[in-house]
Length: 580
Image (cartoon, rainbow, N blue to C red; front, side, top):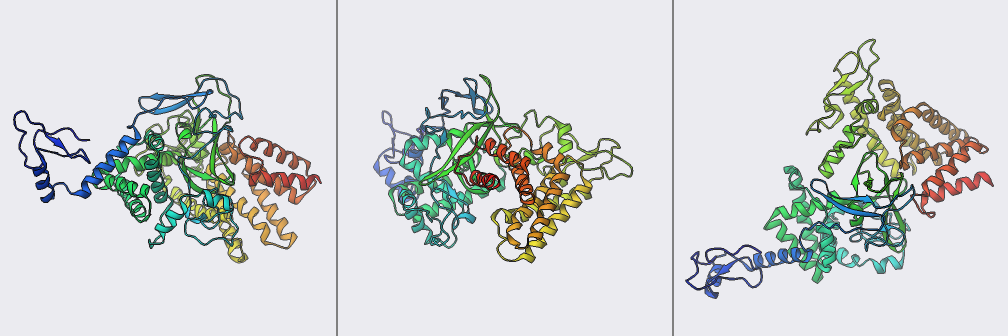
């Protein structure tokens, strides 16, 4: 609601002595002497019915949300939420907790009795998963049921509970391009905020940062909101009409509200992934959004899937904590060098981490691990001004200012460009490996990709030191290729040859893998141990040491994943087959 003006918005004259200006009964945003002034203002186009309705919708949304007030209520008896002047809300332990504990409990309405966090609204699948996973519970689909653009279900129960299906499919049928997951999630949040004041309050309490948005980001956010408004306009419901009015008011009257809305979503959204780190979709989990980031966290977020329920998020302690310790999770790949971590954190969350791990510049130099190219020098590349915040254009490896710690040479440009190109190649091939796109039929193409990964690994190992993250990552991609390619070959000798190559690489990069990936809560480290043990058992089914490793991996990962998880079932089957 705007402040009461000195003059009438219709005739621009002050009120007569003893008279008070009257506001528009709908939007409360304009003020007049009387009805005649209001009519003249409408006729002149100063205040149209459409603008009045948009202002009213925006005001209603803010009222329903209860304002952007930071809540300090405790989500459970084991932890409490506190508020800091600069970093906002954060969670601290109110009682000691050991590894395996779930700090968030059922005392919060957003967390059930098993410590599983509920989403603000049903999450949304990635585009690549819409015909492979159930749109409600995210469980694998029967491949024959892939009729709709956005919604396909694994059971009649999920279909009955997916109240978004008819609305969104009806709207999408009139749109040329199927909307992105972010657009769909935006529309759902707006509709659920209109339906429930509690949902609106939870969403507006989430942190945001619009001061550090670039012009490009602002344009992208407005584009998403425009597409969201179009999707809402085509839905046929009372809530979608109200949500459409709210969305248009953000875009047309005050884009800052649109930036705040999108910033809340981007900064507090979770990528929903399987236990094998395959991204499936995106969602907002208010209870877990209060937990801050650390590059050496003491808790791990994992997702639980069951029919007929949307994906639930569980927070599990990976370290013991004392009373007063802050609970933290990681927002990025914390096995990577500092510049990679900072790039993701600054881009998505608008802050640069200052945890103890980010302050360990000697370790960061080892993780980058580029060898000095000067003749006879045994030094390594160290980033200059390592303590300074990353600047725009200085976050990529080929833009870092590096200097040898022994001879002082800064001639690393050619090497960093080559490594950067390798990273892009690995990302492109690895994304295909995760979905298994190159293992269907074409063995020749698959072998070409394997040769590319082998070449990248060999060259990276030549120019990098033994602890380098680039060595660990390139080797990891090659080992994954070997493991996924086994099913393509019928010849046992070819299968054994692949296993042998993979195990040879694993042995060569054990130093880099342990240095980068072995830290408390690193599920990736234990998964790599599991892959190595399975390959060893393929070579020698009687390898008792490998069986013991699989048992240890299964017991460790059981802290984070349910027994019916696909990874846990795979580990159990491997152990049983070897022990039978």
